View 1 (cartoon, rainbow over the protein chains, first blue to last red):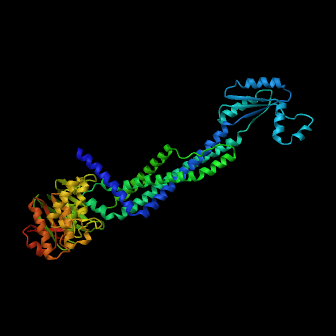
View 2: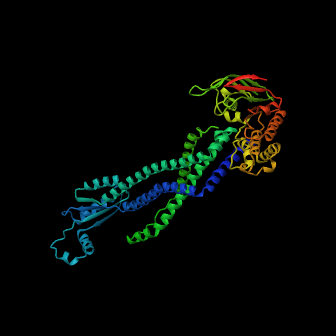
View 3: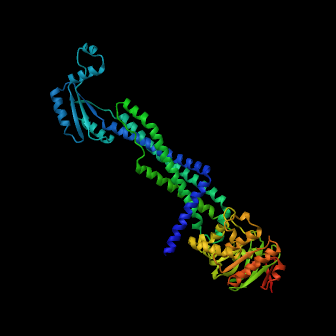
Length: 305
Length: 219
């Protein structure tokens, strides 16, 4: 039993070493294959990082969402203030600010940049405003809140400045779907690339395979080095993909930070997390094994002594 | 042990290579198989080694019923049979040691055991001093002896040789044949296909003659 277990591990080790040796002996071909695999894996993974970053940014924006309630002109400031305090008790409402007509006019004067001209107006044209900060960011819930607030008789208009954020978030959802579709296609590409590499390796070692079969090599024994070759290509290719993405983020990091600071935000670009990086390595290894397994199974059957 | 009953091998297109062969070789015996080119010698050996399958008939080799040896058991059957080819079929990019070690590596022997057995097999065929050479650096006779060492290193109970002396000069051919009879003396069943009638006649083993796919006589 012990001997069998030892033999089993010895044979796996031999297969692993022989597959690494074969890659090492043809460095140019191996590197080119690895690069193709790495690029195929880095493309969807990089796109994922991009979409993930965009989602994080827009989430920040969404949390800054607010509803502006314009109070009808015939409502007194005192009444409007009472309403604003009532709104504060609504579920999902965090902070509520009340701007009287005068306060709104004063704010507009300072922001507009031409206060003298506004002084010439005979009357204050602005309504009183209640600004509602919700505690959630979900577009559906926001719309529900918008409806509730619209139903208050003293409120003339509710403005939810969310539409463009919603559109962006919908766009990002499309982006996420594209990442998945791209992932699927490029995973298939990786399987085919590795499969083709294995096919060539089998073709080059046809005589050897025939002789191994002749002297009693089991199919598992013959398959093993090729499976390890596939696994190694997948693993090294995905390591290379992680390096590529990390490198690209390093290059992009500084420009993005200065871009963010130009917009008075302090945004740090999100890289590939360790978990996602490990996922990528696992995926690459799995695809390598899969590509090798499919093609080895298909081609070994045809080689007989 | 070889036992063939009513063995027929025909190929698609109607060519019959072997026709109703009855053939027995008991455990520990040695025999020659002879006949013209195309008489079916190689085909019979390929059927016995289960490189090809008979179209009809029953074959019992080393206790295996070949009709029942399927995919999974095939490698284990082949390990009990050593096969030697005219073109020796060595791996040219491996050393003599690696070539001879191949059946042992496949069977999962330990390093120590592999080294010991490969050295013993190469010593037996007189090539211990060429252990780390590559086959291209060897003469035809030496390459053939490496092939023999590979066939016997796993201590098979049956040894098949297909024209092992086909490319060799008479003196070396006699040496190779002598090797086979030495293996036979330690209990290995040996079947050698050869058309070298002069050489065969110098040795006192039964001779089976194939003619157009039929076994004509045995003397």
